Length: 216
Image 1 (tube, rainbow, N blue to C red):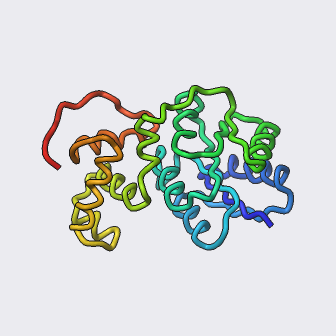
Image 2 (image 1 turned 90 degrees about the vertical axis):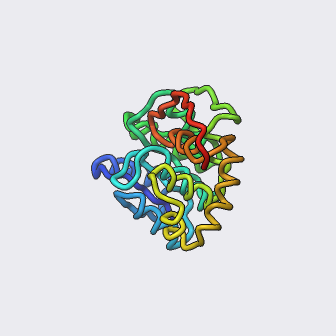
């Protein structure tokens, strides 16, 4: 029996998603949650066949949640649902590893169609989108290991190496060793540049160049 997690903090829209799941995957066990933390609890509790994830939750905003789930649970298909429906957002969603993108303006019938195609192994988007280059920052971030991604998110949040080490339960030396791999995969040279690169996790990334070449 399929087990599907629906993570959205808007009760009415979450109910619409649950209704679409019931039509697309009859008999599925649906776990509802308004938060990323709740989605992660459901993922940790047992096998999940599909995760429907809003890009804006009380404890997650932008692509951080999607990237983290994809890193920790690469076998679980993730469908992003969002009110940000522009082509660039859809393309970036797919670049971060989502199996599909359902706009919140979609009708119930469109949601059912999307879920049916995704369950069949297809990648679904509301309109044709230009793919994000494999050399783009989204693809580079998606290539990070779970530990590397957590460290990047820590940098993005302004946390020090020792604070990130405490969060992950490792030594500060381990964090420094991981940073080398993070810098290499992102194509950056120092901590400041890595923080700038992490803006790709935001819904509206600031891509302005930065001339700071300070040491990590």
